[in-house]
Image 1 (cartoon, rainbow, N blue to C red):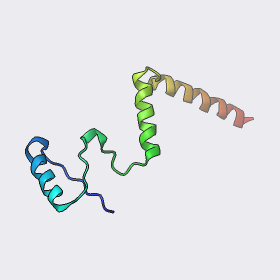
Image 2 (tube, one colour; image 1 turned 60 degrees about the vertical axis):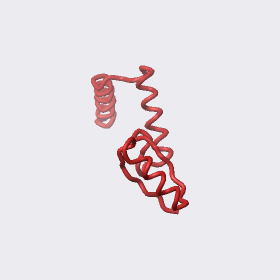
Image 3 (tube, rainbow, N blue to C red; image 1 turned 180 degrees about the horizontal axis):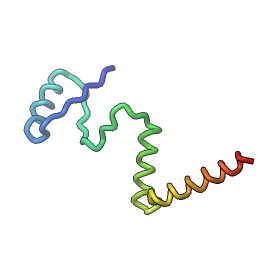
Length: 83
């Protein structure tokens, strides 16, 4: 089985395309742009969706907070390794 992806003007081109594909006996699926995840795996897509859900629910940290925590961790490791 081979998958073909094309971009069309849905209002203008879809009826004619559906007619042609139907006459050819081909199965097809019409999806929106937001459904196109390209070559990403299911695990990658689910991870992205989980991240979006976390962000929408406010389960996020600022860049400044993360960088401060990383700097604390790095400094602690430097002190530990300097012994």
